[in-house]
Length: 287
Image 1 (tube, rainbow, N blue to C red):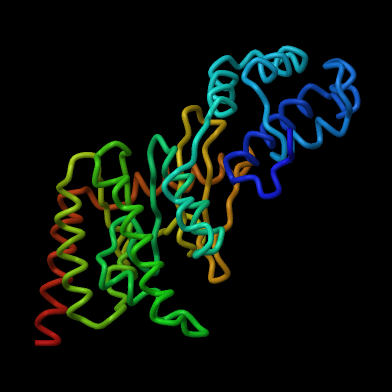
Image 2: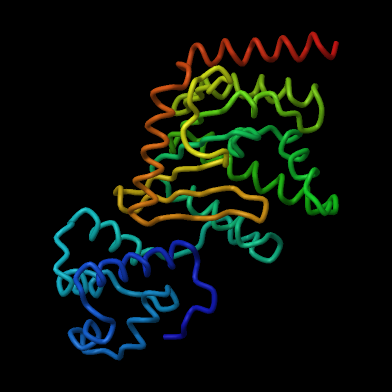
């Protein structure tokens, strides 16, 4: 079977979990290869995501590695059995890989949680707001690139609009006040956020300036839950693109951050009142 030249994020994650399983068993790649009766290079290829693996072989590896975590094994076997491509593959020749990997994560998520300090969560942005966010990138993007990125972001929102994937958003007051595209765009965005907060499966909670302690750093974070906790992923938005973290230590750290947000953010109803007050303030200031 030909090797994959560019394995997807999900294929690489499957390989990383196989490597983690092997290392937890204290086995080297050559030792595992000997147990399976294959070449060591094949272990390297599977663990890098460049080579596929059957669900049967995955279960054999789990047995050799003395893994008894049945929910994890079953989830990995399901990943190994996946066939077909997601809708985001249509954009592979027009957008950078970061965009596709974010959509791939969201497309397989059990729940998505945002922590935003600068701008609204991408899955809750209006067309005008999203376009303005992309328009402020330095160096400037050509109009067609802005339109492609905006259309892709709106397509991602179908995941949430369908109600199939629950979404929680913890939004700092700074992000609610930051203007992209001017006050009219902001007011329309806040109105859309209020409407979304009433949708089934969507929770919007505000973290105001007067909260004593804001957990974590100031990055925009996304916590994407998998079918089992071991397959969760943290995404961090930075100016250069998206960074992904899935080590047990990183997952534990960010679970603590989001647990703190859960305890300190305003309730959903008080958050809606807070958003309405900002809308009123912006409208009166720029009337």
